[in-house]
Image (tube, rainbow over all chains, first blue to last red; front, side, top):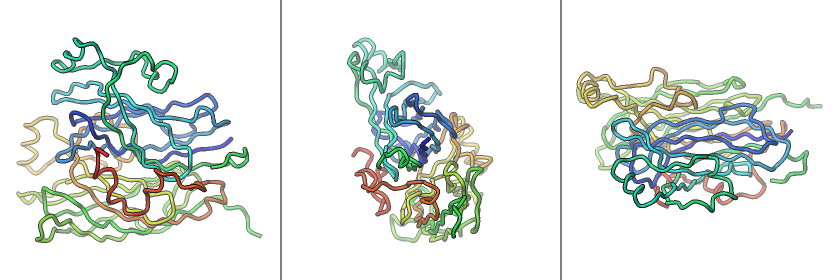
Length: 175
Length: 210
């Protein structure tokens, strides 16, 4: 079995309409993959930056995968949420990002989007808060189903990841 | 005849260079390393405190530490790769020692020289009144154990305010990772990967809209 280590941070997010954001992350992978060590999902702190437009989460990621094949290479499903002054949480956007395939250091910017509702729903979002959400968040990375959606762009999530691989040469995989 | 190694070493040199902050003039940092259970520190301090450093009179100057970090780790498994955890403290206007920020970063994995800009953040008070009390009494919210910021769990409902950065330089060398079968660099540099180890002063933190 070949192994992959993903070590790094979800550094922060920028380009969103408001600050006071947090991020929920989850790892999604194919059936050939198994997580040996590390948490598969988590939620960052809520950051309200005092002078910069970028929310800093500095959330550590440390995952150890074992795999029998290259299909289903793991990816992150990200959801950026906003917490207002009263402590209410609303979903801001969805995004997904493949874990880089080559060993080494990578700085990634994961772009995100949110579903766009009807005119009435958009007005409600504007005045009351809350937002349209996907019934099935796993849709974010399924190429077959996304044609049904209408979406609006949101900001980016920044990640810094180091990838270490082991024993892929035995299977003839070149990096 | 050499036997196959059972563990690898990570040798780290470097310095906490400076801190860029706007609201206050002096700072000292406490640092420590958080490592997994398959790791141990062979040599070097696993925690310490820097000097108390002040800004110079020039406008826009940084708080310079130039504080040496030297440590060697031994491990059998990259899981639990060491993280440097920093907590910054300083005096407020009333002369109380208050927390100025926490920050954390992974020790870089690739051999070479890396400059990393670590954002600092402090926990926020639950309400305005608490915030005012904290300012008056000099007892701001702080983490009981700063090492909690190096873990995934338990961070969900911490609310923080981020402000300021600490620049740290690491020089990293690894030993026996290849012999154990770990590949930490690809043969061909990828475009996103080539941004490391040169001056990451201009990392995306400076340019969030790029």
